[in-house]
Length: 321
Image 1 (tube, rainbow, N blue to C red):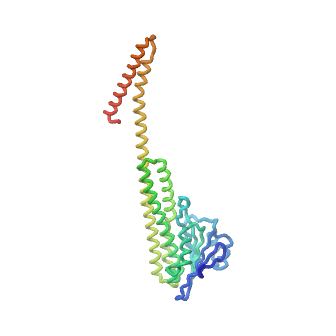
Image 2: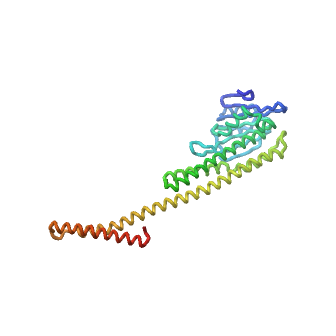
Image 3: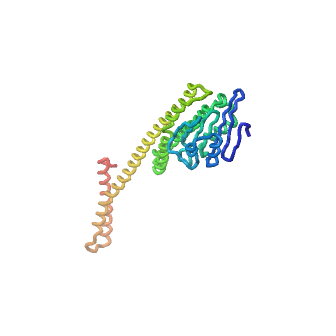
């Protein structure tokens, strides 16, 4: 186990980012499924406001991102799209950030956050936060990883869009309908989750640090704002593509149904006169000898065949076939 890692409790882990060449350090507390015990620990150690701590409980879900200033710290709530059994859901993360510390509270479903925590535990010397030992830069790196993970979801959507397009033109309509509904739902969820990210990132450009120049912080978080805007634009393009594919699927389905109905109508129209001939010739006015019955049967076959042929010629001339 790395020397910079400490397991404080079952749900609380801490990484200390300590660059020996600098006289300071940053402590990152990562808390999974926070309950009253973990909230009490934060209250005792950092003295955060109760209203912010209550919003961090695992059984409380906020409906929108937010950023509030407390005494010597910022409280931030953000949502990031996570894939769960083929469905995009919002992964909620709370952040407390102040001088020399950063605290993340979440349910553990956000893969990018878990991977970056492990990375900082094993390879922290390669991170920007190690070079500058700033909690503001550590927050930037975490958000950057989370936003990059959103790109991977959009890439998965692109792959699924290609599959849907193939299914449409191979007339696998039942499969296509299910795929389109899933894609629509995921795109809507992604857009709903990230719609306010850009505004939050713009607010974070105003964050002050005693270690990093304001202009440098602004440059970092401007990059995140640009990424958020780009993700929104990509998702908008995917939304338009999916709507176009849905229209195409409906057109293909309608064309197929029309062809089926046309075929059934033609068969019905051809069969109707045949039934008429059969019924007429099948009427027994007087008993007939067997020879006449055979001749009657042959006439029925001839007139029925001629009638069917004439109907086919007529449909062909009208270009209904």
